[in-house]
Length: 377
Image 1 (cartoon, rainbow, N blue to C red):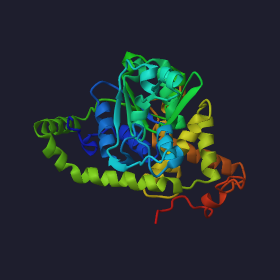
Image 2 (cartoon, one colour; image 1 turned 45 degrees about the vertical axis):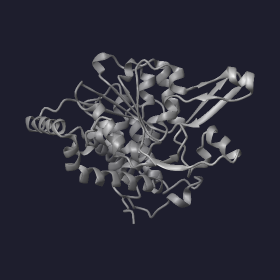
Image 3 (cartoon, rainbow, N blue to C red; image 1 turned 120 degrees about the vertical axis):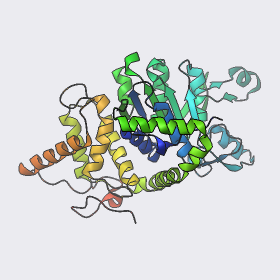
Image 4 (spheres, rainbow, N blue to C red; image 1 turned 30 degrees about the vertical axis):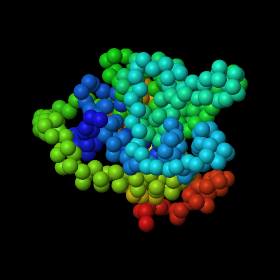
């Protein structure tokens, strides 16, 4: 196994690193598309993130990385063994990092059912694919723009649903497929269709660093890593451990992060004012803002969280106007949110309730009027 460059040693590219970290905090966000020039550390960052994540508990013989603590999400493989009273031993395993080749076919991605065995012997045999191996891990696609559109659709569907179901001739097999989807591409080699672009929750546009001092730092660190990878990793072990612990803590906190109707209105007004089509962006911004708050050890989202989330969720969904790929920034987005809130207040619009009383999570999410931050206990 080749040595992996530490995530915390990557110079610059803060937007890319933040998009990866927030997907690690909340895997329900839906992945990230990283677009940029060659040699800007895209694949290095993806591999480093997977290596940073804490070990997961799985069944020893499961090819699907089933979570012993979540029986409702078990694969048919695990359910069958449980029904037959076959012992299921739990072990800890590193988070899988799966590199999907551009030449991957549908069967290679979703897996295949042996129809002949089912017909002749009445047995269900399933050959796991890439989605099975990537469950609870990170699925990396380099040059995603060169991958067959149908395969990209399959990957995005699985990332959104969290399950992979294969059906052939009336026989089906299901297994969990919850993973961090990371696609990278060089726009000079062609772009994705708009429909596929929108399916990626977040995007990060990155460029080669222009600051001479930072470029020197990149060279120095890479030379040190190549000369002695183990020593270099030991030198960064403390920073890696701190970030890993922070992500792990945020994962446990993210479901407790609250939001108000005012927050939802801010998100909706922002996407509406920027003529963003559909409603996927609104949901992505909310999920990402909650992850940002959890990563900052807070239990309520703020306008700044919404702005930081919108910076990652909107660029690939905005085609015209002042907020283009190159100009979107959290400061501009936060200013726009505050302007809209100020205009609404000046127009005498009623302050929205702290939470929709019809929401099933009403009691859990409501908080005192005026509360914007909140720190985790």
